[in-house]
Structure formats: C-alpha cells, structure tokens
Amino acid sequence: MNLRKQTIDDVVLRDKRVIIRADFNVPLDDSHQITDDTRIRSTLPTINRAIDDGAKVILCSHLGRPNGKYDPRYSLAPIAKRLGRLMGKNILFAPDCIGPAVEKLVAQMKQGDVLLLENLRFHQGEETNDDAFSKALANLGDVYINDAFGAAHRAHASTVGITKFIPSSAAGFLLKKEIEYLEGAVENPVRPFVAVLGGAKVSGKIGVIENLGKRVDKVIIGGGMAFTFLKAKGMEIGNSLVENDMLDFAKGIEDHALSRGVKFYLPVDCVVAASREPGAESKIVPVQEIPKGWYALDIGPASVKLFNLAVQNAKTILWNGPMGVFEIDAYARGTLAMAHAIADAYALTIVGGGETALAVHRAGESDNMSFISTGGGAALELLEGKQLPGLTALPDRVA
Image 1 (cartoon, rainbow, N blue to C red):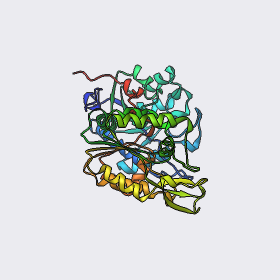
Image 2: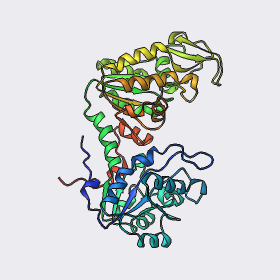
Image 3: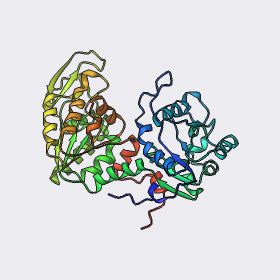
Image 4: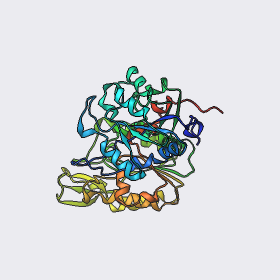
C-alpha cells in the first residue's frame, strides 16, 4: 500500500523554514510531568530528517483542550524539555504560536535549529480553521509537513487551513507509516485476516464493524459491546452494559457475517461481579448463566482459549478495543491474555491507538506488535473507510 500523497522525501528542505505539525498531545500528571512520551518519540524521524537536510525546523502541536485561551496547565514547555533530552540538543521555545515575537525568533534561526511553538489551541482560530490564523501560521515557514496522524481527522487550521497559504506541503514519516499500515490492512490484507474488536460501546464502532465486516475472514467481539450482541441473541445479561437501540444492528451484523462465511466469535464465559466497585464479589460463569443484577466486566478463561485459537492461524490481525474493564486489575486478565495471543501469532499485527495501545504496553508486548497506531479517533475513522481531512489537504504525489 503506497501513500498517494506527496511525502517528506518529495520536497526540498535545505535552507527552508520547515513547519512540522506534530501530535505532542501527551498525557501529563498533576505536576506537569509527561507520563508517556511515545507520541514525541514517534515523530523524531521526521524532525531528524529536516535537521539533517539543513532546514530550520519549526514544530507546532496542540495539547489538551484549553478552549481557545491561554492556560498554563496546557503549555508545551514540558514537551520542549523532553524533546531536548531525547534529541540531545537545545530546543528553542516560543511564547506563542503566531505574532511578532514568534516571527522575530524565526528570523534569528540558523540551519539545524529547532523551535517549538506554544500550544496552537490557545487561539480559537486553530479549531475553527480560521483563514487569518492559518495564514499567520503559514507565514512562519516555506514548507509544511504534517506528521500528526492523531489530529489528521480534524479539519483545523494547522492540519488543513495552513496548506492553502504555504508554497509546499507534504506528509511526514509517521503519517505515511500510519496510513500505509492501517489502509493497507483494510484494502489489501494478507489472509486469513482477523479483526479483534472490543471496548464499551457498539455505537462507537458501527462504522468500523460495518467496514471491516465486509473484508475480514474472522471477527472476534469482546469488551462491553459483546453483551449487546449476546442480548440480541436472546440471552440474559444481568446488569451488564447494553445498548438496547443497537440490538437489531448487532443481530444484523452477525447474520450478515455468517451469510458471507465470516467466522463470528463472541465470549462463551465471562467474569461477573456483584457491583462495579473494585473488590466486589466476582465469579466466572458461562454467558448463558449471568445472574440477574450482576455485571459482566471481563471475558472468562474459556473465551480467552477460544479467541487464542481463532487468531493462531491469522496472517493479519487488527485489534481495536479492550476485552474488559482493564483499568481494574481483577478485570484485566482477558485483555492482557489477548495482547499475549496476538503478539505470539505469526502475523502482521496492527493495534489501534488509545486504550488498546495502553493495554499492549501494560502487557509488556509493545515491541512484539508490528505496528501500534498513535491515533485513537483518527485510526477509527480510517478503519471506517472515511477520508481524513488532514490527509486530503495534502497535494497528490506527481507520478
């Protein structure tokens, strides 16, 4: 699968002011320390290429939701510090992302310098994709590189608007890699192709289930959404999570899959608890025997075994969504077992971002997956078959 868009390999960077839109929207703790710098590390190849080519590198990103005004809790200062440590060089940090003070800093840059702009979302124009804001941003550079896959599903000034006002635009290495893995898996998978879908709600994954249901050889459904499918089959599910308005959809999806010869797997047993509180009484029961008033919070050992067997002969596995309430240790076993099974499979393994990436990390299997996406929402939209505005805005590659 080749990206049909212009990439960083196609543009001249030497002596240019290169604006790289990164996704530095990393988790911070209460004392503003970065708790996971995966997203920062993921874009280093693009930054290093620009430095090696003799560019003046201007980095920009959002962090959190400051709602269009300055809020010190969302400053990118800790990111400048971490970047400096990871790259072993001094990172200049701008007090804003547009305006005279920033323009002055850019004018003083030399080849190989790296300047990080302050949070884009401190300006309302970023999220409204305002032309004036886009233009002010574009004025800082000669070349624009989008390497923010995690924000590519947003039509914002720094992902879409800027491309109208800057002479040259292209995709960075991370954006290219994300698209090639995720689109490649869906468009042209090596078979058997297995989709493992979990998470709380069917409604959040309708598009993914519909799009992948047409393309896969096997579907494994776990997590809270499995109980909507089980109830649709007429089972008693106690107080487990269910979306009653999704029952017909769930039944239709399973019937459609089976009619196409797609193997459809649902849990056969589960871990149920008397309440959702940690430490509540819990037990393992077959899915046909969930007691009234109890909550199913994880898949059980027989389901783990069934799902393990289902992925064993796969050549492509796409996993999006945990198998249970994995934030609570007592209900994390199913998700962690799934991570081990997928890591052990002799297959191309692709992990959707967000919670699933976190679960894989917790299982200690991050290095054993072929690819872990850095974008939750963007990955979902791509798997639904949707166009990503940040990608559409980039020029096509000239053959």
